Length: 228
Image (cartoon, rainbow, N blue to C red; front, side, top):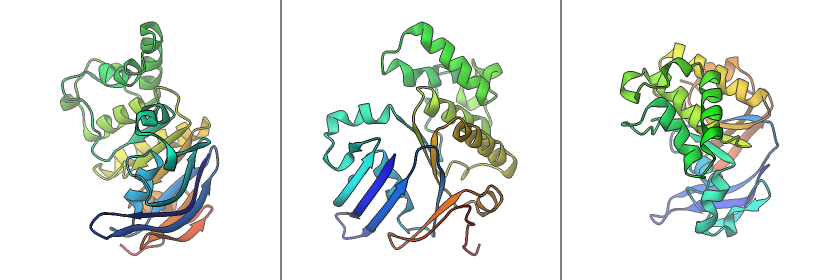
């Protein structure tokens, strides 16, 4: 599903953010990516959906070599990858329904299918009753639920989440994790970068720890492993 082989990423300012990473993530896995600030987690995550390109090495996603993928083909790649951000990235003037539907409209899905699928995922994230609300009328946790609904509305094989609970209170964070677990239980691969020690230690999944751009720990049902 996801494979990195001898991957490096050096930025123009000389910073080596990823330093020789080798990793495989199988279909249906749930993986936490942890590590101190500046360790290279965000770069590691961004390379999976081609927001960043490796300086060296091979990245395979669903059999596609991202290192050789033309920029014009990136939108096609992302149809099979859902991305959830810390800051939601919702369109402020669109309703909840329209924000989620937008992801299907850009791939020219039939309107009848759009309505059915949007209502289906809004039901999953428990926001069907707020379909006509705009983002400013929602709490932070609700906005993140909309972001998750948008990320899964086109049935992606992989969902990548970059600090999805970073701006949320503890109760909202647990609610968001329940949704990610449900998505994973339905067969979707989930890769989540997080600083949330409590969640990682309570909801035990595979843990990949990155320090200095290298994987220093890779454990099934691992713990967070860092001091607060």
